[in-house]
Length: 340
Image (cartoon, rainbow, N blue to C red):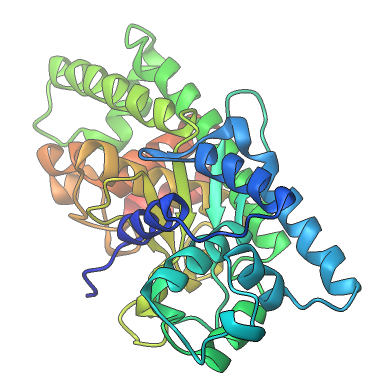
């Protein structure tokens, strides 16, 4: 797999925004000052999120007046494409500046509800490298890429991702209530259902509840942190490496979940919004708790099959437990999931 995660592309954004050479026109200077506040070393800052929609509106208005998006972005980046300043190729410095702007052009703060704050970066599907690298080289090719206004994630996709995160947060909070009150017979039974095997003692189940509660607090905190980013792995597009993959996390220093084509698929026991929220929880257990994929639901992840120890560290076991606590499973779905 590629060794260039989104975190590295984000470093290119920071480098580009901090570099000299941007337009000295006041409107662009004002945008640049805000963009530098928006992009912090540890991720996007919600306090300047409104800049993103304002940038898109400015580009749209310019396009309506005859200035294409590529022309506007390059002008912002300090390249006028005319006279002595015009260049037949895009070098590293200009690629960093224009690439940073292209990333922001396709970055969205998803709808907020209470403490729920998540970002989505949807680089156009025509890109097979992160923008800074993709823009290097022949100017016409760079102009074509900068002119592509298509978002990798449509407005509906972004709405679904936002709702999935919000639902996931609600389920995690309910799962925290269940695992935090193990004296309740009902709560005890829910935990045992997903994590206890034939050898598990009552104390084992109680201990599992404490383990779950501590881990779920970390996941809830991440969903409320304002630092979680959804994107796809641009460099892996078209390689076939992620055919059939819903989502994954990797060794990013930023809080990134990669959303791939199968995320919105329908090949699971769960489907639609409930499955999307399950996937979010599944991936965050990997990122925050270092869980493993001992078994997926469709393979058979019942604790009687994989054992208590593996169930405690199995990402799908955590995710299905949360769905159950959220009241989103039918008896038939529970039977199917635990009967494989």
